[in-house]
View 1 (cartoon, rainbow, N blue to C red):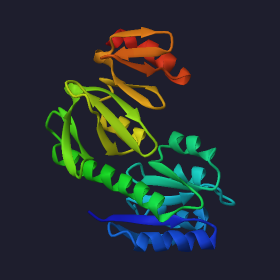
View 2: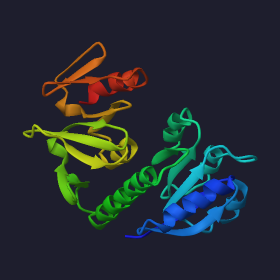
View 3: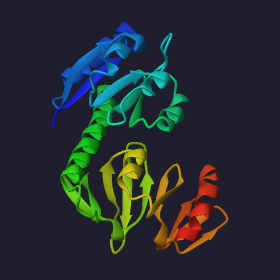
View 4: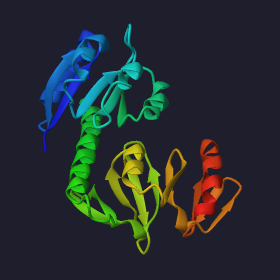
Length: 236
């Protein structure tokens, strides 16, 4: 699968570096290169790349502001010199963010995360119309089917997620963001309870203070997710 991509960055060295990284990545095809978000605005409605590497801090129109005009099917990987922007990146549905100076290894990890998301989405589209009973994720160099009924909870790491399933002591580890995983799981069954945790509601055994117990695992409840959890308990 080949992903079309744009690079938007107002710093010429960063633009040149990212272009060289795209050229070294066999599943990426550069279809747009812009030195400002303003110049990219002219084409954002006519073209729809799969992926945009988007600088956050730019004059006139920031990357955060520009992202509001991007089609929902286009995934965004933010690039920034400031780590505090990472949280804001996830708030606007970014797939990932890269902290400058960007190494090729970090770039490739983020690009593979995008490829994984599109491959899974493509498979889901082929099965559209059928009742979904699970998802496919890449693990151990192959696509593995994970049934919704088997999922206990999901734990997010920096670039990966760990899917804990019943009757298996070892979690399934796949290269994916928590946001991408959250989008793939049925919202009537799964609930984000922490920045790093998604749980299956009917697997919850008990809730005490700031923890949820599922199959012997203690799962933290994030303060910003607590009220939503309390509201959802009645639907379990």
